[in-house]
Length: 213
Image (cartoon, rainbow, N blue to C red; front, side, top):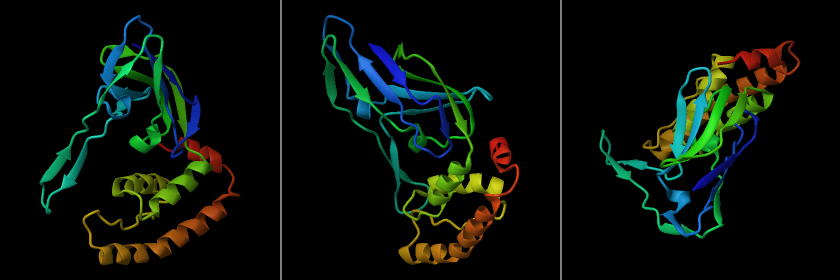
């Protein structure tokens, strides 16, 4: 198998980061494999050059569901259907690394593996910008977003505005509790929005954002 990876060389934190992956069969016989869209063998790697940490995920998602409270969970593992790549043909998948990982600003080496096969590496730089702040704020205050994604966004905003600590509802909370917490968060959201508007003209703002880690 031949794996080719293409993606943006520079992007901003919280913006979609699609990885354009092509799996090709350069051989003369059909190549059998699990459907790449659900495969646990197709793994994306974003290696932080600063820390050496490999932020990785597989195309197939392993999901866990709480069972009646406590620490009991049901684990759901994808069962991909087999597929075949004809000689000279290819398959393509396009996962969004931002949607699957809790990324941070920095420089990364990005590559894809499938068992023993490995793609070309692509250097990617993720920057913290004004656009990032807008995207993070939209995520943090959206009650339809998963708890963990809202927490990630809130943590980044708190590095810029330490008072940004909204009360986030857990997935197991009752609807009335969630509504009460969201109502209580509104003044905080308003204060942050007003503060951020004032910051737009502040000298050195872009430099401050670039230094956030």
